Amino acid sequence: MVKQILFFLSLFFIVACGDEKEPEKKIVKEPTKGELIVKQNCKVCHAQGLNGAPIIGNKKMWGPRLVQGEKTLVTHAINGYELMPAKGGNTELTDDEIALAVKYFISKVE
Image: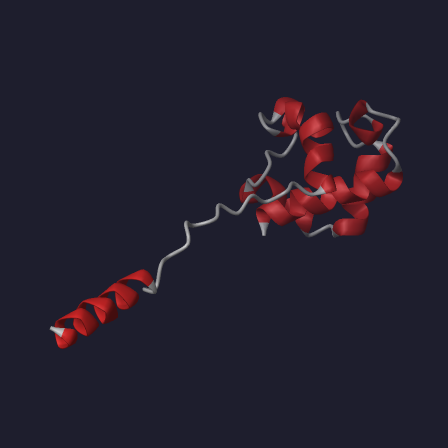
């Protein structure tokens, strides 16, 4: 009888102390400042390719631009280029914010 009680107690502790899995935590990636700038200021044209704007993440459209280098792309974005107005039309953006947006665009292609 004592053996049976010990057996059931040991089973109880094995089950009770078993390796419980924690529920999986969903990792929520916070958007970068560059991503937020793009979504708030650039997405209208760059999501659809309006007026020849290279579509976000489109390697074929971004390829010829990427070879110009990040510095040139930032300069174009700050000063305007072809049909794109300076700073995408939002002159309240700083040059540093424009650089962050350009880095975001580049990161979506590579």
